[in-house]
Length: 206
Length: 416
Image (cartoon, rainbow over all chains, first blue to last red; front, side, top):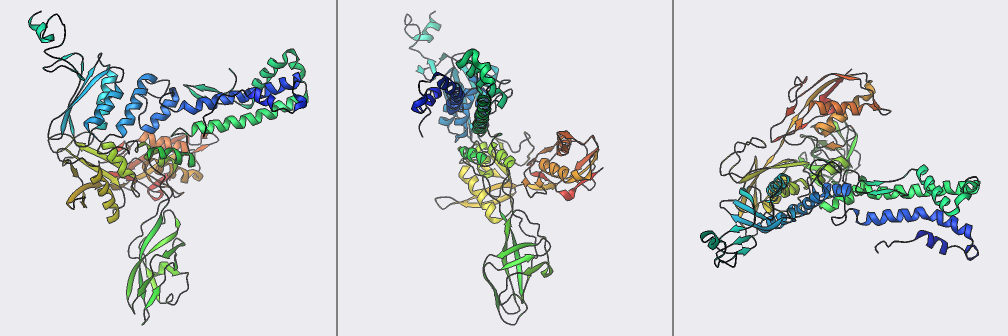
C-alpha cells in the first residue's frame, strides 16, 4: 500500500469537472469551496499515518502506545503526567524490557535506551549464586524519577529468582587501573598530558 | 484552522454544524460578499447541508480508525487486531463436556454411535457422543459427551432420569445414560474487558525468563484465566512482600494460576514454566509435574493452582425496583469474578485480590443506571465474606496469595 501523499483536493476536483464547466469562475469557486474540507481530512489522514509511532507520536498517542507495551505515563495520562521526551525514552526501553531474557546484554541495551540522553556506559557484574550488580555511568546526575525508573526497569527485565545485589549510577569519570571509554575510566596513563601517568600521577604529583 | 483538530491532545472530530460553518467560511472566501446571496439560495444551502453529512460520516470513520489504535477504545474485531501486536488472540468459546456412564440392560452388546445425540433434561441442552462406544451385554462403559452449544452449562451429577436419547439407533432403548460426576463447564467467548485485562498482562510475552514473561506465557494458555508470579531473589527461604509465602525457597519463583485441574492443563503449565525458567532457579507450588528436556532428563516443575473462595454477598438497596436485581448481581459478579447471567465468565479480582467495599458499592450504583441517572438512592447495607450465608464482614477483604474470589447469582442476596 502506497504512502499517502499530500493532495490539493480543490485542484483535483476542478480538474475532474466536465469541460463545459472549466473556466467558469462561479462553478470553479463553488467546487473549490466544497473540496476544501476534503483537504482538511487529507491532513488528518496524513497525521494519522505516523501519529502512533515512536518517532512521530506525541501526547495521547504515546499514551496509547504505552497501553500496548505495558508502560503507562508516570503521573497520569497526557497532559498531566511526565513530559513526552521522558516518556518516550521509557517506551523505547519498555519495548526492550518486554523482550528481555534477563541476560546482561538485554539489561545493558535497555538501560542505554532508558537513560539515552545521559548514558556513557553500563557494566553488569555477576555475583553467584543468582545475583548481579549493575553500574550505569552517566554524564550528569540522575533525577529522582530517572533513578526510580532505572530500578523499576531492571527489576522487570532481570530473570525470575535472580537478585540485584547492587544498582548504582556514577557520573564520569571514574578512576581505575585500566583506562576505558565504555565505561569511562581514567587509568594510570590518561588525563592531563603535562603529567605523564594521568590522573593517578596528578593525584600523587599535583 | 478549519477541519478536525489533532495533535498531542488526540483527535477531535467536528459536528455537522461545525462542518457547515467551515463550508460557509470556505464559500465566503471564494465568493466574498455574495455569500449572503448564496445562503439565500435553496440549492446551495441544500448542497452544503448534504455535503456536511457526507463529511460527518467520513470524520466518524477516521475517528473509528483513531480509536481502534487504543487498547481501551478498540472493541470487537478491532480489539482482536490490536492484541495481535502482543501475540495473543481472543479465547474462543468452549463446549461443556460430561463423562457419562452407559448401562446396557440388554443381553446382547450395543453401540452408541459417534455423534448420537442425547438430551440433558434438567437444562434441555443437547450433547453428542464423542467416540463410538460399545457396551457389553448387561455391562457398563464410560464415554464423553460434548454439548452442541458453546458456553457454560451447569450439569450436576445425575442419574439416568436426567438423560434421554434423541437419536434413534439400535441400542438406544437399552443404553441408559447417567453421569456420576458433574460436567466440565464450557466457557463463553472471551469478552472485550477480559481480553483487555489479558492484553495488559501480555506485554512481556516476547521475553523469556523474567517474571513478566513467565506470567504472560502462562496467562496465554487455553484454560488459564488468571496468572500471577511471585519470586524470592534472596538467599533465604520465604518472602514477606508483596505477599507472605513462608515456604518459597531462595532464588525461586512460584507461578499461581487459575486453571482447570486436569492432567493436560497441568502439563501445559509446567511445560511453559520449564521453557521459561532460568537454569538454576527453583520452582515452587502445590502441583508438581515432570517435564523431560531435549536431552531426555526429567525435571520436576512446580506451580500453584489457585483455589476458588466463594464470596457471599448481601446488599440492601434503596429506591431500586426488583427489575434491577439481575443487573445488580451481574455487576457484583463482574467485579468479584464468576459467570454472569449472560453466560460471560469474568476473571474479577484475581489471585490474592482485594474486594474493596467502596468499589463494590460503585458497581451497584452503575448497575441501576436508568436514563443516565442511578435509580439507587442509597445502600442500606452491604456485607461480603467467604463465610455465609449470610455474610458478616463489611470491611475490605483481601484473599491469601493462592486463592481467588468467585461468586454467583445464587450467592448474592439483593433486598429492598
